[in-house]
Length: 388
Length: 132
Image 1: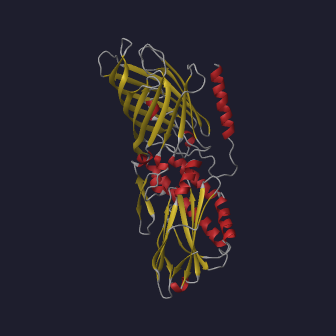
Image 2 (image 1 turned 90 degrees about the horizontal axis):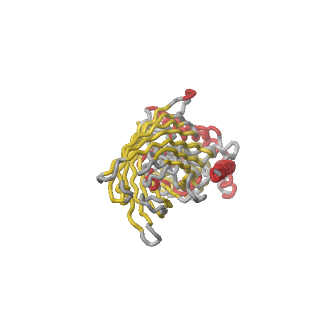
Image 3 (image 1 turned 60 degrees about the vertical axis):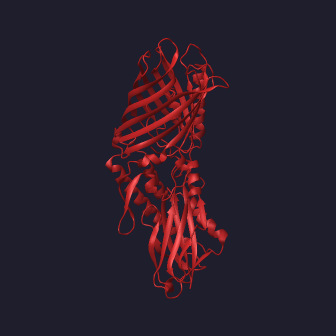
């Protein structure tokens, strides 16, 4: 109990430290939404995430995840993950805001890009790679000893389809932003000093850059909100591999898996909001795992593959997310009974970049093992974007 | 400062600006007598949020020579601060003038590449002296 209190106290302190924003700033309050944690495939392969069925999102440049079970004997978290998307670092050709937002365009007679719809495969460019380091007893034998586990994973959104209004609303806002920015530039160009004094000239344009005009700033925030809307349908695939440290010198292949998640977000439209932030979400889940340490009924381990089929229901509000997931697991080897996992999950955004995840219910296992899990997650830096 | 020879008789000098960013961008070009301050006459602008200017007719050599062409691009960047900073480092612009005595000439980078304190906004400035 003491550890739980300390944990929440630390979260509260963290929230205080990052909750202050600069008055009048355009974008300092732009935050990430629904970054479920720890959700890296490298974590999920090992069945120690609070929820196995993942919610699609746009991977960040770099995210650090920390997970801690409530019943761990050690007070400090021992499970860590990182997830990053190379897209943010690589420079591809023909980059534009339309490509970034996943919009298909066609040039009209004036050469202007007109949005013709959504590129449903645009999520592929945000394919992410994850690494995890875990201290957990994942070998289901009679010896209660944690293993050091290194895991690597990959995650990609194959298809993502928003409502028809998504592309239309973005097209309108992008043009609105462009026209407002033209007015700002016209004003700035009219007032620019002579470029014969390089220092004064640079200082003039630096002042222009430092200005945070409300018009383009507000429109830009609207664009952020629209692109944060959840898709009506998405298909997400992941794969991961884990290596188990049996002792300090012996490492063995532990588990490999690949899985697919289909999801559908139905807007709740509370308060007739223009931009949807509340959803009823449905998920379907299929996973194949090759496990070198599968539990048999005699309390021993053997090599086996297994197939997971599951579903999840979720209610997502602005900062709060409540859900229930159930997964049925069947093994290929005779001698291992099929198994079920039924878990209630809750996630709450405590601060601008701090999330608490909880999961409570029955996990896979020979006995009726209960899950009691808390996880925190944050990205480096004090701001996040609204991206899904 | 970069320069471009317009000549004296070229009737149709044009500008291309290719902005490379995943942020929202808008570009505008104006001309004013070289060395002067303030004023300026708009001669071209982007038409969408790529910030690109494509084959914009600026005028003939007689109306352009002796002026400085200023091309300003305003950009808003997505992402958290680290991502915006990374994108600021990556973003670039290439400028092309063609139709003058010097033919097609490429100007591979802006003179000024500025950002605000939290990297939410960036500005690119390119000045090109148009000489006869």
